[in-house]
Length: 437
Image 1: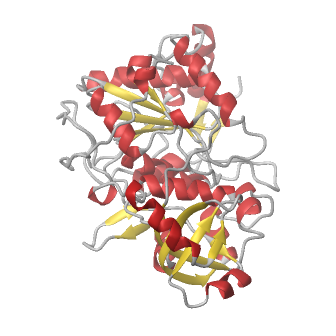
Image 2: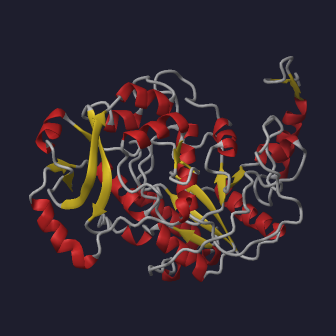
Image 3: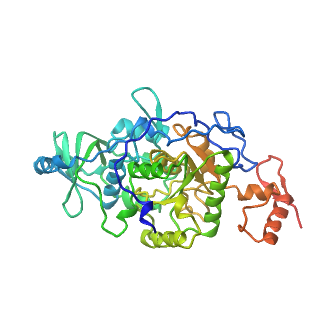
């Protein structure tokens, strides 16, 4: 991949007009079964294009890194502080927080932030406005760690090798309501949820929140750090390319032809709407994933080949790794994925079937309704500025429209069109019933 895709230089974000306050773009059609409406008027066919990148949540990106001249001083301070060991997933969350993906959050959540996230999927700012925040970003400690902290208002955070990662300041310790957290985040307390078993079940009974002072940028030394662009670096790269729109696509699996056609068709439609240079952010998730997902290193090799082979255009595509761990929490988690991309500069977000979903850990069915992710994104508090681009292939078939060139052989597409034409609404207008052939 050309190194021009990854320019890592400082960047000051712009203040932008907040007029992009619609969720669904008319050029991207929703399934006919969706009955809800966006909270604001949809784009007209004559779109007023505004140059520049979307403003991050809270007005500016937070940067929680200690300046280089202060690092040695902070290390000396940390030597006398109580210590808390971090798991690898905890370190991933420090990475997420430190670079501003969760802006305006400045550290692990205190109780008020935790409860707002669990029950409202949003945080109220000092000026009374709201930003979306749908998954708790918290740090668990056990009884012994709590006792060792005592009355201290700061703790040092160490990784598994006892390397100082950060100092957590102005701390607050509160109870870890595991069952409530699991039920509110996943909508079930069924056994077998991967993230729950990995991080919550055996975690401590207390949570510790506070402001982070991160000693140095998080590095993994796995050969992939060059792909881990922060929101600041991504915004700088989008500006370098003169992007007037950024459309983000998250995936945790290899890119296939359907994905590629969707992404190229999305760019074509944005051009038709009047944008001059929409840029694709191909943004694979790089934190914790369950054991049967394709490992990140192999996914990145495949993504590089996709660009090398010209399936996606390197000139209009930025490939970067999103450092967040994966919850597999469906409609709740997809809000977090969308919110984080706002902070990276994206004003369009592609959402597919069952985003962030998984099979039910006990029953043989999907854990979440396949359409709920895109429905929730259209109504989620704090995401009003983000334009949601749902997958539209089934809708095209239902409406007897042609798919993007190369998506499927013509004969196979005609069969799908015939199938959808055979469906009739049931009495309650919810479940389509096939007509016998």
